[in-house]
Image (tube, rainbow, N blue to C red; front, side, top):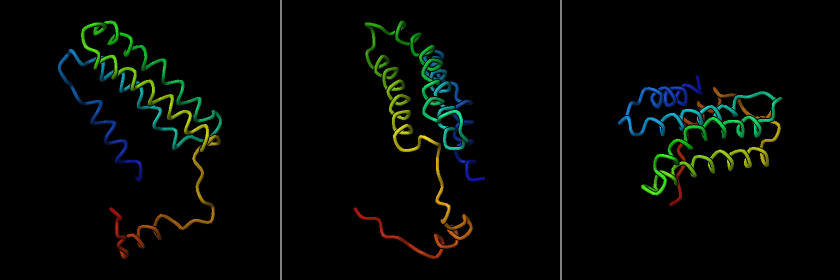
Length: 127
């Protein structure tokens, strides 16, 4: 229930059909999306390795983009490079801070208590 917004967003991305010229871009993004599921993984495997494994499949489509736009449109090449860096940096972050997976506070409050307290309290956001 709490992952529904993420699932809906992924579904919307899958249903997008842009100009055929950008079809490879969508495919590269779609190959990258599974790495977001590391938050619901139980180990093994290590989440950082799972994330890194998406580099190859995303690079497959990114390399097609690189070949098509090499010397023509450097923004497209930068797009591909950004996708790769995103995966690598996410993997490094997860390796440093969540090596054994996402951990929850065992002494934390239940979701119901949190939602109830969120409804009754307002927090000022600093600017």
